[in-house]
Amino acid sequence: MTAEQNILQTTPHVEALAELCRQHDKIDAQLYKEYDVKRGLRDLNGEGVLAGLTNISDIISKKEVDGKLVPCDGELYYRGIRINDLVQGFMKDGRRGYEEVAYLLLFGELPDAKRLSEFKNLLAQGRTLPTNFTRDVIMKAPPRDMMNSLSRSVLTLASYDDYADDISLPNVLRQCLMLISVFPLLAVYSYHAYNHYECGGSMYIHYPSDSLSTASNFLRILRPDMKYTPLESTVLDLALVLHMEHGGGNNSAFTTHVVTSSGTDTYSVISAALGSLKGPKHGGANYKVVQMFEDLKKNVADTSDEEAVADYLERLVRGEAFDHKGLIYGLGHAVYSISDPRAQVFKSFVGQLAHEKGRDADFTLYSTVARLASEVIARERHIYKGVSANVDFYSGFVYSMLDLPPELYTPVFAIARIVGWSAHRLEELVNSDKIIRPAYRSVQPAVQYKPLGER
Image (cartoon, rainbow, N blue to C red; front, side, top):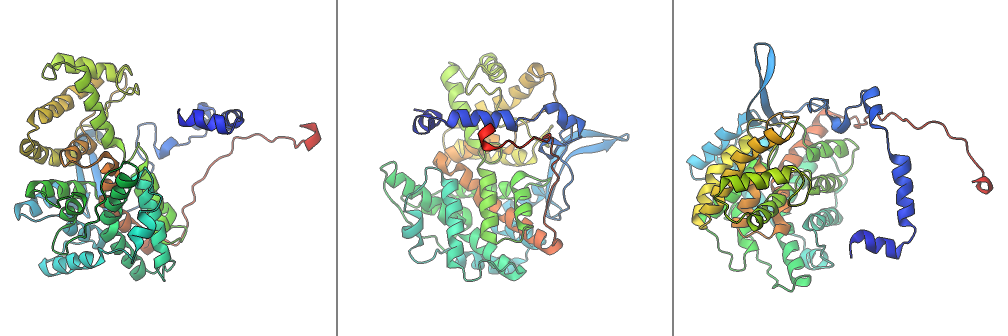
């Protein structure tokens, strides 16, 4: 029985009430044009409406040539430093980058060796939950959705904070650092509780190690034997760095600014950001990619046959395959058209992990789809701005190779993005005391009131 069927059985009048919503809430699409409303805060060319200023990150997807803006290879900057250079810097020295890049995003500059060591120690000291929190909060009535569990845990942590409503900068920074530290614990312990109580699996509550990185600790507390390879830790760490922040006004960062501007507490702000990221249009896309490839392999007998793969992709675009939405998941981006720099950085390490895991054929298939899909979309779509593989195209594949359960795909994104949200919250507090209040024009004509007996 579907959720809709169940609701209709328990509340017989709900469909009639829903129809009233459809009838009275629908707005004529022509009115958006008439009043020059930027739907989705984007103009007709898909460019985001300028709603603020930031020092935290930036995206470049177009460059001026002969007085005209033309698409270029995408570039992503954290605090003015190109993401490629950041990754190359810590990879060259054999370091994990999550903590170093988190410091950069939060405090605006790269740490020296002493400050980096102090910051790592600070995060390590924060990797502990209040006494009995796991038993009393996480293990009780575990939700099927780990993002809901994360949000509930974050809101409940406010009850353990004597200064939960203090929005002074030092206190908010303390709260953010604590949340950054405990997010991996909240996510993994929630999964183990769900897997035990809902799926009949074994319960594991491993403690993190103060000497390990965030990525290594995540794998340690997730796996029954607490074991992982150096390459697995390296690739997960890279995924966290690439998902940590994304300039240009992404939905959850905007949510963070909006809710922060109301003057509310850190726990409410981060919970709101989690609700934004949970949406399949934002943080849930990577699992869709994995499901799409599973469907491709079921429906294409020989995945090395590029003609057969292209035919499947054409059926996807026409809404004749997989979920019939007409989408090739992991291809295309609201900002990038020629290339997503995160995907470019990720790809070579994905290939290395695929080789270690004996999944070279899968990696070849992913590469083939990335190449063919842009050609298929160009042929099938009348409006074409150019598409390329985005970071979600590869991240779901990586998580599957790391044997992460699908329920943790989006929470892993949150473990990374909590750093960006924290940076945006601090930036909003530093720069503005005005509540963000957008304008909505009412298009509802005046209606005469009718007494109850005349309705």
